Length: 158
Image (tube, rainbow, N blue to C red; front, side):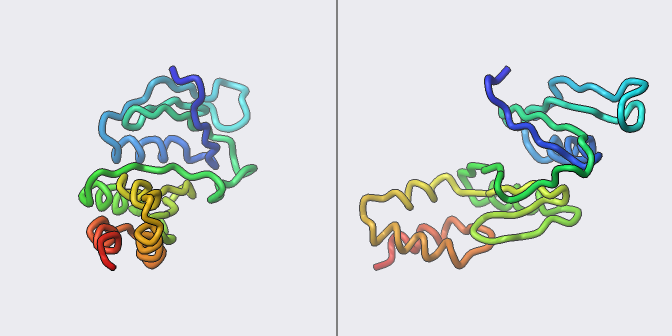
């Protein structure tokens, strides 16, 4: 068990979100779950909380109702080593009504924000050659879904 885990509040669709995320990420599983007992707020048997693991990252999901909508103040970043990975997560997380945002950010159909990020991007943005880092930043700022080849090309251009 992780010492610190993200805890995400859903508006009574946590089970649908859980199944959606489990279908997208490799090596994912339900660690434990609890359903509403008799007399609990909400329908008996509705998923109350679940701990799931997505590619080794544990997170908790809760059906909390409409009191606390998700915002872009918190997002999950997916480090991708290839364009195929970027494309996979990007297209899958948009399924069913997700929205593209900008610079590798999207919002899935449940309102959770994601950053689908090539792992080379932070390396290039932190390059000691600040002109190179600036070219990478300018290229990224024009993108919606991030393109590794275009990012690398910007880094190498003069």
